[in-house]
Image (cartoon, rainbow, N blue to C red; front, top):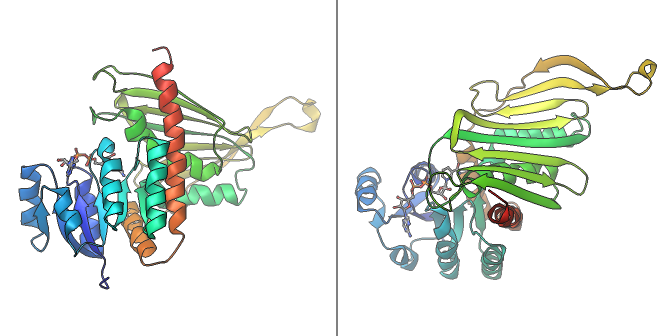
Length: 328
Ligand SMILES: NC(=O)c1ccc[n+]([C@@H]2O[C@H](COP(=O)([O-])OP(=O)(O)OC[C@H]3O[C@@H](n4cnc5c(N)ncnc54)[C@H](O)[C@@H]3O)[C@@H](O)[C@H]2O)c1
């Protein structure tokens, strides 16, 4: 392998262009692949050193590609990732890498048997604000954590080949599992497909964990509010990560219930300071791409990212099963 990792990327759409920009800045972006001729023409003009193709197999057959980045629609992730691993390439694949646990396990088996990195693109785990939430929880700053809920709503982007659970919920779910460090014993979802038959636009999810903690996710592209928010309620403090805020991404509320001795068990509430710690403005995607490159370089725990991705797919699969059987 040459010193700079040689990357080939498939999928040059809305999100793929951000990945291409980062990998071009950080390493050697050698190949670009997209099914759309228009996209290929646009990227050929922008990345003049890269080879451009509409044929993923041509990219895989190239001997100057060490790693493949996949940013195509969700249902294509598994077959493309499997082909790339089978061709001996490290893989960074947008979330989720597969839509079934069995498929995800197969990808992990392939990666492990060939000593390759398989990294799902769980972007929010690289967000400095999520790192702050984790730090606060693990340091016991919030007291016992009781519940976590995510709001990921907006009007659009209306997707037609993946529902709000798989498109939006995957973000919140990766954060909830990371923060609580537990797998849920109950995972249920309700929702409706208002626009495209079989593709739920509005989804509400409920999770309950063995420790008794609970979580909720409201996922929708049919909503008047643009919300990108995660709230963690602890017994002593509460914290909100609001990604729509420019500066105050994280707000810590010294608010909580308490039982003064003189009230004989009656609950009262108390409110103290409300403050926002400084959160680094590093681009989460840049940090995520760097992490992929360092895993390929042999630094860090390369098995962890793939297994964390499997845990997310497992819960998504449970939520999806309950979504299709729940009364609409
Ligand atoms: N991490 C994040 O925050 C984030 C944000 C948005 C999207 N995404 C993910 O990125 C992926 C792409 O989303 P998008 O919004 O960019 O979609 P998009 O529709 O804008 O782009 C997808 C591109 O893939 C191409 N394509 C489809 N099948 C292909 C194939 N077999 N081979 C080569 N090219 C193919 C299409 O022509 C299109 O240009 C999805 O998995 C989505 O969930 C992640």
